[in-house]
Length: 124
Image 1 (cartoon, one colour):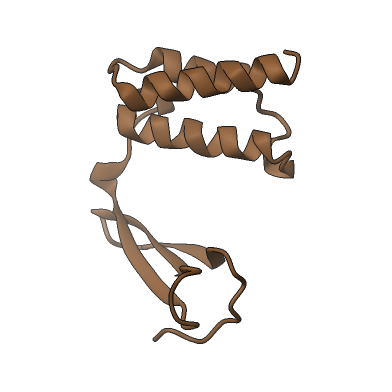
Image 2 (cartoon, rainbow, N blue to C red):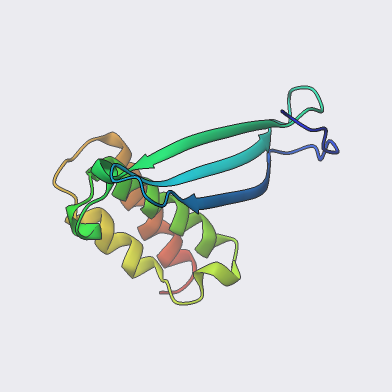
């Protein structure tokens, strides 16, 4: 059931959580994310997704290009906002993820351009 949260004027994540599914061979975890879009009412919504064993890969390099692009975009955002979560990451690492992707496409090309522009503006 969705519970009310204060309107913040921007999208909000509240209490993402994960739990392991003991005893179930196909299910690895359940991911719960509660969010509230800024442009809607003041009631948050809960998304629950099961993370299945078939969704896992043996390494980050074995993950899909779509997943790696999402990771690169999230890491890039953390670096730009000087997040403490990005303390060990750098723009070169984000660029390397993008360059290692097998697919081309506008999203990848645009991300590479954004990372290179940010690097030059930051004096890197």
